[in-house]
Image (cartoon, rainbow over all chains, first blue to last red; front, side):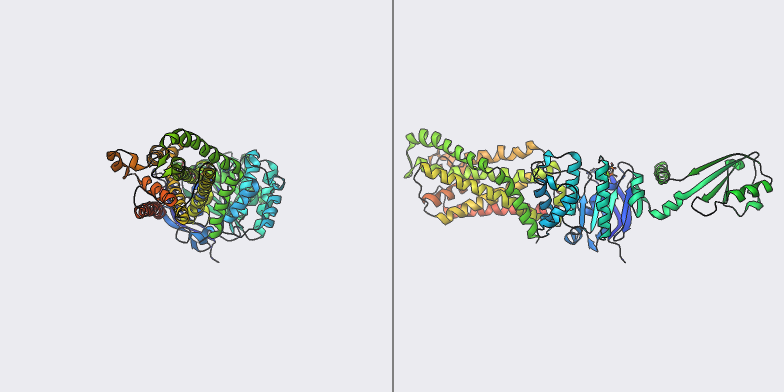
Length: 311
Length: 253
Ligand SMILES: Nc1ncnc2c1ncn2[C@@H]1O[C@H](COP(=O)(O)OP(=O)(O)OP(=O)(O)O)[C@@H](O)[C@H]1O
Ligand SMILES: [Mg+2]
């Protein structure tokens, strides 16, 4: 199956000469939820803007549903819904007319029943005749989401949908996202909350400095995260891992002053007990023990720092 | 063509207008009445007739043109500048529509509003003076073309403007003087000879002259020339729009 969004070698150089995207290649599969993580200024919004037609790519190509976003923009954009990072709405319009306008703009025939359903889902129905300027910030964000859903997109971009949002809206939002996913809608979201990415994404991508550092199945990441490290400080230094311990996943650390054992907490046996037995049999005396766990955050921070050091 | 989108933009813009309908209706009525009091009564009592037409009636076409031109420009420039300013333009850029559809929606709405105001002024004027329109079809054609072409110009200004000052700049520095000096309130033939020649370089003269011809059958410049002038101006604006469309100037970075 071909990916619903195909991004190939996309670079974006802004007018001032700043390169915000430096060759991004990414395939997004139909029906998946992809979370994009990255520090401020990484290029997340730029990537989304380039896919949605708000800016043009400097080089490279992007296809949505097989339609090139530049040459066949109608075909591509008809599939895409966007909830931008910034809330921008016409202050004097009502919720109802604003959301209805969005549907018309995408060339879809009037469907008041659908718009009612969306507004109810987002707890906006009793505000439908209220002017936007009389809404709270969180409600405005809901209106932004309603606008994007009003034209039934197949691919939905949520650019930091949960920034400055209360628990309730966040819950509503994830409920809606789950519902959309069940309908086969592809969802791409950016977030600074790693737990959020962990909780709902199928895949996670990390962007920094305009480069995609990693895209991985969340399951694979979880496995990495599920791994724990047991650090064993030794009484005296050793030159190499003794042959008797070859069966264990061990690494030498601190120039032979310590051993690091990698194990899976979710496995039936961690192997720690047999490692201890084998160690004393090999005549190694231990001084201290320490365990640690990888988190998605560690991976993220580690990746970001590594590229920053290299730059 | 995404007609649904054109219709949506048009209706959305018109809804804004209808919400303030009283305002849109009352202000031209009041300003027209004031013009009649000041120009018609005060000056008219001294001039009485211009080329066989009472001065009160004589200024009606110019008065309509004056309002229609300024309204077209301000409606259309504001209509597209506002989404740019508050950021809602993201939606126009991400929708499956092209620039020409955006133009049709915004310019169509701006022109409709200006046409409405022109007709309100005409109606108000009819209460003050005897008006007989000799060429009603030509009158309407001139009116509609003026609404459309100046709305196009306004749209271009709205796209170009980077701030509110620039939005006011062209109307204030270029259009208003041209319209006032374009023979709204006098016949070009009333000017000293040298100024008559200068006036012929003012495109608005041709518009007002042609429009006045439709009312009274008399004109400062031949009617064919007026028609050519408005056609040329509309053509220029369309050309500029086409160029913006091709190059994406100031719209998409
Ligand atoms: N219109 C623009 N002109 C010039 N530079 C820009 C423009 N928009 C963004 N940039 C720059 O491009 C880089 C990437 O910005 P972008 O908004 O894509 O980051 P982001 O990953 O979305 O960050 P955040 O998490 O803060 O939203 C930044 O350095 C930013 O300053
Ligand atoms: Mg961003």
